[in-house]
Image 1 (cartoon, rainbow, N blue to C red):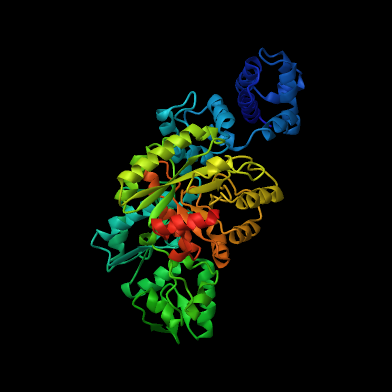
Image 2 (cartoon, helix red, strand yellow):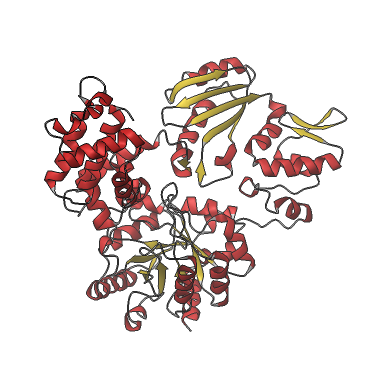
Length: 572
């Protein structure tokens, strides 16, 4: 191991010791030792061979022994043990400008933040504003630094990529060079995490369109350029392909590049049995093009009803389309109100009235306030006096308002044994209770499953919030038997949340259809901490559609009277 690598490890040891709050003199010894080794003149082996390494000013016996061990074996037991004691994501956090070991230590100790994704989520929930040594400006700088780091990670949240793709599509559409243009790929299928952007266009003069496209300010680098396909890297960090076809080829290309690969493969097998060949340029029988005006015609030729893009994952959609059994997927206009709203009573940025008025302007007829419970100390969870004050404020609002109502709720932490965070006399005051995991997330699969099943047995649990506690691109879902939990929710008539925060989108769409088939009802909730957060509902809607949900499956498609009755029956 050379000087540079040894120096890096010594410096990292210093950082880790600072994270653990070790003696400042010990920390300084490793940091100085790193600098001394890096600046040594000549070859390190000569110092080690002659035993001169210990005699260098600033390097004592303990440090020289570790340098020799690294040089001779390429490993250091002390370093490996130290590193294993610290979550690996902490080092990523310290890559963010302005976050050193002290701040990283505070984030870990006070908020249990162990990854960049968890940090970003905490910033968006305003948890750093009141944290010692941070504040609003620091929180803004950290968010900006996170976005810079995420540019080159290779995977991106749907919510980050979608507006970028929409903006580029709009620029292409207004160019007068395009006759048709659509976003394709995983974005069109509303996948929660995407790698890149695919846009399909038709144009009479393809090269003029490609010239126009490659000059857009969003583009950082042109990778390749041709008449049918141009690949670029965007300044936002992701790759993008623009494919240009003739207008009559557009429906076939749009379907092909929307995917998924599994869906396309299954369709090709079906078409082959019918004597039809499929590719991105058309449907062919005996090498003759079968003309289709749009994707609806495309599916009809194959004896299928139109399959919405969200369902094209080869999870039974082709068989359902053949039998005419595809669901009438939920639409934005079906949603009557928004549950899971946070306010300044806990970690939201606006008051009860401000959040209600904002939702009313958006066209909804009710919201459900559900601030954090007392165990969520990091989010300023509500004490009993806070709850009573909030309930009084909500009652006063409802008396004044005829055409918009507020439901009284709480987001109660699920305690390790599966109980809720308040006694029954407090829980009985709420219209609904969202039960969520925010701590003790490393339980075994069996213990976590039992924990959630226990909370579902509680008569006051209305909705199971963000069931798996995952944070996309940051924290994996907790270990649990999801199917067993869903079965219990069905048996106990409990609602499962589709948390619409773009970093959660939990429950995962791959489990939603299973729950639907067992009669479970869902709540598509924005988990909003601000007015901007209310718009999260669109992301949850996409996940609900991917899970085959219809309006009848979602409780916040009920009007306020129906929903109150439903909640009341649940308690009984």
